[in-house]
Length: 215
Image (tube, rainbow, N blue to C red; front, side, top):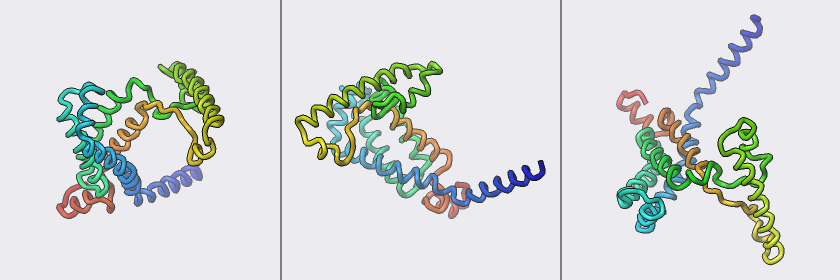
């Protein structure tokens, strides 16, 4: 028993030493999310009238001009803030809000998957269906339909198109446009909200140190 406890303590100490590099996780989250939000924010800014029309008639959001402006400002400004790690916890709040709005208005009725799975055996729904998770059985049935549609599309392309060239950089998929990406981004932002931008690699850390504040 003493040997087991000794090994457990040493392993725990080893894990704790890894915390010296705990800044790497928020840095990775920031650098992963920043270009996503900058690109979509820039698209909204350069196609603002189209975004307003989409918010008004496509998503049926109230105050479409204001909503479009807030979404653009949050994504573009928040994206650049994430790059430098400035006001990280603050900008995470409106960015999480945009993800909630996006998931609930543009993606919710499409289900979970961003890309429709075409193999029921490798779909996460195959794990959830046996326990009666809502929508899992329907998702598996949809996967079978997706597989049939993809095979039909491949047959047409092989017969009438340059299939090898068309699939040279990747296989064809069926877009499902579910909440998967929005939910994933929300989780990453939620982590940043609690941890901040990370030690050493964010302006938040150095400003807090300079001002004698707890980051």
